[in-house]
Image (cartoon, rainbow, N blue to C red; front, side, top):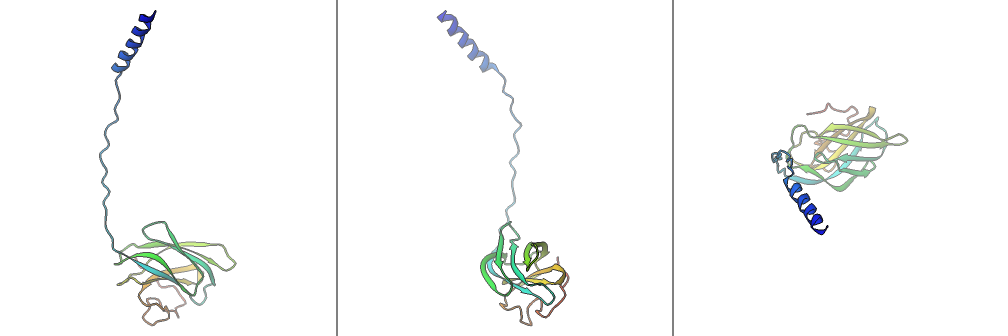
Length: 160
């Protein structure tokens, strides 16, 4: 009886060793291109133009990630460390979320206007829930050299 058990176990081991193993085809190694983009941390500011509602809170999504940065009401700047490329690139779009007083949150995607040098990221709110985003080394959007004048009441056309 003991010999039969030993032989049975030996046969099971031998048969299991003969089992064919189906191998999956080897997947080629996928190489993901890596581009090192020089970035600069910038502050975020906001301007609510004439005709636009008062903004109680807003956030801006970093263009290379899904991190939403902000949380301020309009009228000041915050040092949030928003990461902006040192050089403007075509197709730089960001998602902006804002809460006008006594209304639900609004979310729109817009382009970051062309800039030569990264600076404070300004979110400009206009009537009809229009929004534009610019980067400017000028810390005051009231400056005549600012990309969108504070006296503007209509949103300028979007740039690609």
